[in-house]
Amino acid sequence: QDPGRAGSWLKLSELRSFSLFAPNRTSAAMGLKSDAVFAKIQAGLESQGAEVVKKTNAIFAFKIKEGKNWVLDLKNGSGSLKEGEGKADATITIADEDFVAMAEGKLNGMQAFMGGKLKISGNMMLAQKLGSVLESVGK
Image 1 (cartoon, helix red, strand yellow):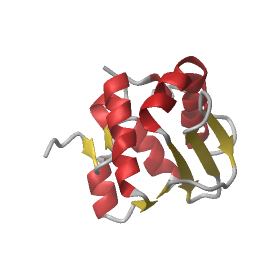
Image 2 (cartoon, helix red, strand yellow):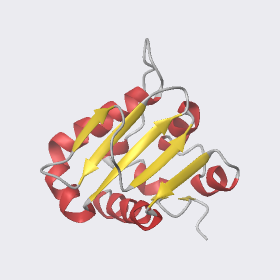
Image 3 (cartoon, one colour):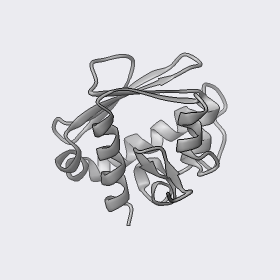
């Protein structure tokens, strides 16, 4: 297996070049470090949302262990990202620092998953689909 694979749902080498998950180069003054990653996702939705929605057709929830939750809707309209909880097809639970490390390519997703740092619930096949969409768009 490719050591750059992050579990079965992301390929980090491709992820870094995809504007929805471009790593943050500055630290946030307040809040969680992952807030900056989610801001990048929001910016990517504004420019590429409709294309990503066509390819994905799923809703993902991210539960950051330090207290924030996000819902990424890649099923409706041009996509949306909102802070809070909501119904999702797949839920990803991860610590703030680990999420940022994955976005920056410093943490291998498979190792995070196997080590219990990353949990996926719901439709795991959709989590794999998200990875495929990110890989193809990120080329």
